[in-house]
Image (tube, rainbow, N blue to C red; front, top):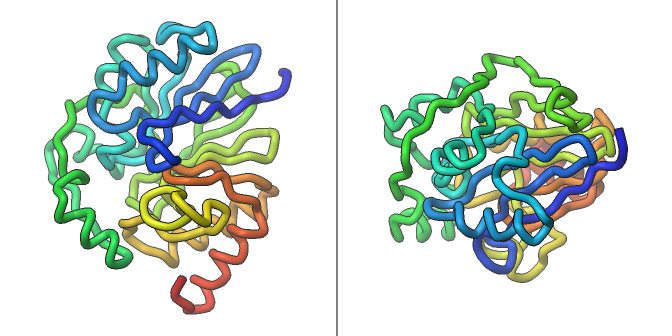
Length: 241
């Protein structure tokens, strides 16, 4: 299998919200689906690379927040590709339960008051549901890598680790000031919301031990391993970022 490319699809400008296309000569995997009504933007990004929704072999939804799962239903419909997600976030995907948000600072508190994180999206049923510490080999979808559970941002958060030592980690970490990386894009920061910073730091440390060199996130990035190591160590040593 040849080299893997990671193509950022900007859902909002300045890295505020990112989806990604993982591309190899044997297949294409979409990672996250953006906010509601992002399907046209994602479709245009695919077209720029000579692709259509039907070229997507798998859709990975890293967690149930509306800026990652918002357009999953429509993209699933257009592409006919299976969606993989984790069972711990299933009640939110099915819209059976309202998402709760644990803010990490003043921006998170401000952001929740705007109502944007609470926006409704169309429910969908994942085709492949990871349970517990299950993992999914991506080779059948044309990409050398795996999807597995990385709880902490939400309990159903999942990440993708590729054979080229790159990982797509959803909202385990973000970068820069405010949402995404308006400035200081190379500096790791907590996202506006997370369930457990310590659990996140342990998951990031595990990815580092497994040799990940570059981290791609839903907000800002990418980040080098040394910066993620600095960030996770500060959390594990009880220091605030």
